Each structure stands twice: as structure tokens, then as C-alpha cells.
Image 1: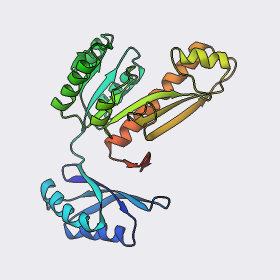
Image 2: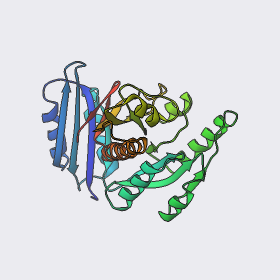
Image 3: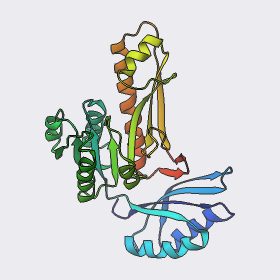
Length: 282
């Protein structure tokens, strides 16, 4: 992994981009291990992810050459060393199923993360955090203290150098300011029902309406509540025999799996923003 990189890019589509990228990497001693591309005919944009090795140049030298290469194409690009796990901060409230799942997958080597801190507006999971040797920050949030609490949260994120913030059932609405500060870096998980049930006790509402599908959606956080670009979704079928407790258990399992997949793909630089949508190179 020491000399392995992921190059992600997007630009206006035109003939020869793949050839040009491959030629650039070959010219600078790169060897392609994995490549994927997508042409969005609706927007005229081209997206590409390339995993390659390169021992001849340093990371900074590669970036310098890439700047010159990308300019004529109007590319937005990123170069990511795979040897560096993604520094991550997790937010949680009083439901710990997603947090517990992420911590277990991380310690099992299934997620290329460096979990630097857990932030919560409750104390419920400080012992869980201690069991994984992750610093736990209890930051209460109220209407009066919300601005100060978010300032402290942002300070921790910046001090830890976090590239990813995961809202693992964090039951506070982020301010527009914090959403903009974390644009493209924060992933949220929420339940998805048809029809939609908002507010308290959504699984009780779902049971009363006799839903047949329990779902979950992982998306990037934006100032528009629960309307950010979607990364992953899934559903599980239920029926009239299921109790509220059954629905809740199915929902929690689905949420945990969907969030884990979204976090994994983001940490491996497989998700590219495409306006209000995403391109996911799985």
C-alpha cells in the first residue's frame, strides 16, 4: 500500500480522456491496478476512478504533475494515498446500533478508517468508546447552546484532521453553517418508509399503517434536511405478523448495513459527487 494511490476525477466529456489518463500514469511510472469510468449523457460530464502504484515519484511530485495535466481538461481531481486510513469522527445520540457496527467493522479490518473521536450529546456510549480506546466527547446540545456546541464539535473535527464525519443516528439537526463546513465530508443515515413517517417513534407509525417494506438511506449531509446526495439505500420486507419490536430490529439492521457500505465506499474514494446525485464505483 505504500506506493498505491487512488486518482478520482470529473470533467466535461470529450474523446481521449481515458487514453490521456493512462498515458500520463505510464509516463510517470504508474501501473494501473483498477479503473472505472462513467459518462453522464444528461450533464455531459465524465467521471473516473483509477487505483495505481507509483514508486518513482513522491505524492507531492505526482500532485504537481497532475495539476499541469488536468488544467486543459478542466478537471476536478483528487489524489489519495491508500496507505493512509481516512481520519474519521463519529457523532451519535442514544441509539448505538450503527456506532457499534462501525466500531466492530473498523477493529476487524473491514473499514479503512482511523476513528479519532466519538462525539455525543448524551453520555450513553462512553464505555463503548473506551472499550475501543476511542476518545469520547460529551457535548450537550440545547436551543440556547447549539451554536457553542457546534463550534466545539467543529474544533474537535479540525484538531483531529478528520476527512469524514459519520452521523451514526445523531438526532440533532445540524445548522446551515456546520453543513457547509462539512460539505462532501459528512454522511448521515436515516430510515426510509413508503409512506414517509416523520417525528417521534417512526416504527410505531409504520406498524400502525401496516408497512410492507423497511428501508434505510445513507446520504451526504446538506442544509436541506435529509435531501443530500444519496450514496446507498436498501430495503427489507416485513408483513402483518411483525411486531413493533420486529420492525425496529429489522430497521436497525438495515440502517447499520447501509451506513457501513456508504462509509466503506467513501473511505475508498469510490463516491464522486454529480450535482445532487452521486457516482459510486463499487
